Image 1 (spheres, helix red, strand yellow):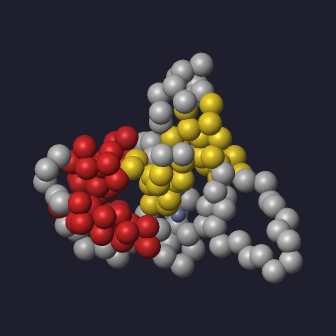
Image 2 (tube, protein in one colour):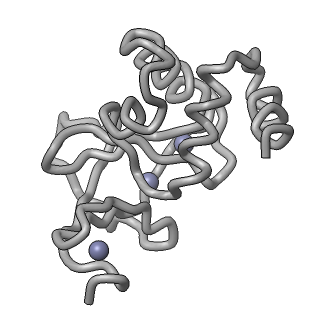
Length: 137
Ligand SMILES: [Zn+2]
Ligand SMILES: [Zn+2]
Ligand SMILES: [Zn+2]
């Protein structure tokens, strides 16, 4: 696991630091979208807020994780389609379970294309569906 984490960081041209390794490890372990608070909770007191914030920002820029917007704010999830710094686009739907509160990427369910009025240019599209996940139905 640790070696896999280091290799992933290396693939994304990121120097290995304990904070980067631990945060990436947390994403790999949980497999759901995580908020800043979730990550803080799971890492305990080892890193301060700013270090975690910077690490998330770096991961976002490099294409390792993407933003997941839900009704409680911003969460982050691992990119599973080999994103890179240059090519980091997502058009899949996110699903939030109202029962267990977990938010997941539905990587194979694409957001339908939306026709915008003249003059509007989309740079990011988010779609969240709320309901019950398979574990809670
Ligand atoms: Zn991505
Ligand atoms: Zn659920
Ligand atoms: Zn996603």
